[in-house]
Image (tube, one colour):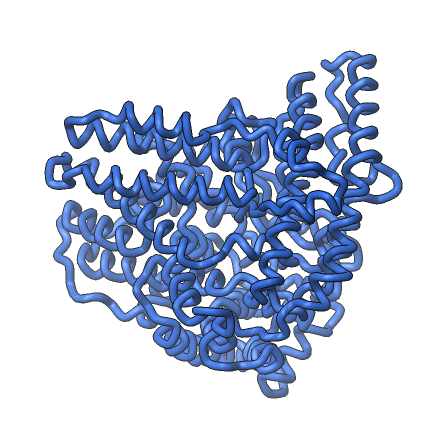
Length: 627
């Protein structure tokens, strides 16, 4: 659930056939330039804490949408649908300076003069700006691409998400396609600068990157995900206009997109991969220990150190392993844990033979879940969602599944994308837990519901805190028992496998980046404690290598939510209502875990409960707390 990166250098521009003037013109960066920003800053109210806060929130939201037009497309924010984020050095430094100015302006708001219902808004605004500015000490922009993220993934996803109803919609897509070579060049310039500073993703993780790039430019333009929008245009657009738009798209594709993507792929093969670092620990980078600690804090929204998270992971692995051993005994399986997991990985009964059957079962599970949700939630989102296969150009190195948010404003449903690559690595026993996490009541319910909370500022509705969002997704997996899932012992083992998967993440992410584990050691630890197929495990380990700290947020967030729920159940006793608890937890949108806890403690008091000391997270987990 994430999006974009890239930058500038004269030598590289000439190498791709650009002059600097043409490069700048091709990007046509107009939104929220320094002059427009300074004008908006000068118009901030001088008096009144509430007025200042509201005006600063408005400006911050506008700044995000116009500085990162890709985000604006997903949000349905109008006016910048023809632009890409300016990833030139000038653009990056401009955004850094503007963020520092926004932080300085937020410090002039006296929180004590705000009414209670606005203090959370202020805390979020200030905390987010402060954390972003603190991150500027690290050269994150010099890592614009890896096998999991970058323009080879974000560009086709964004083009797919753009509206496709009118001639103007297609003109907007064409305008972005015309400017795309500039973004490709900016990305390449950043990669070159990273190479010179010995700052790249680990070499072992880049093996599929050239293929991902070339998958965007097949010989038949109709097969390219870049031109997918032009294959099936709406009947409301006259045939002559359709032909004109398609011809223009194909011209851009052949004359501009194919050579520029091809040159990027060649650069990756010729220069980037051979010279990429062979180190796998992120802490081996310059100032890497502090940088990794920052990433951990940002992703989890806690003050936990990597060492503390590693210990939590080891404890969770032990707890979940004991639950898994009980299920193995219940099945009557004659063999140890390794033999049982080998059986789950290899027995044909657990695997579909066609991609269509796999997708059909995901849709059937989703439909079963939808009918049970009112028992656990008082408020459900209006926005629908669908289940689709992960596109072929990225499926090989993509994770098991992911969710793409929809937008009522943009007229786009949410999508649960399931991976159908290599059916022998897609067992049926993982499908129920995965559907709960990615669709309902996991990501779709939480994100769509946040988008529909019109009483909170749009800035908050569009913010994703990984600790909360992914913590909620993992917590939702445990709700599967209440939703009538996991009745088959193998599916229940699958749910525990997914919980174990996130516990293992705490151990191997911190192990590889902080404690000196090798990639092979991490793969072996994962294999020894999980039934996940080996292909999935290798993909996962390589994900942790290029997204250090991101995978820690899931289990940390889940444990915090379970801790809060256990505290509420103890404080409220028979007055505890699960529907009211879930509604209260979700109605403010995504929150950093520290602010979520203080907010929910306040809710417990309002409900008449007395706040006791924290319930240990491990004691708050498991099926018992859900029945």
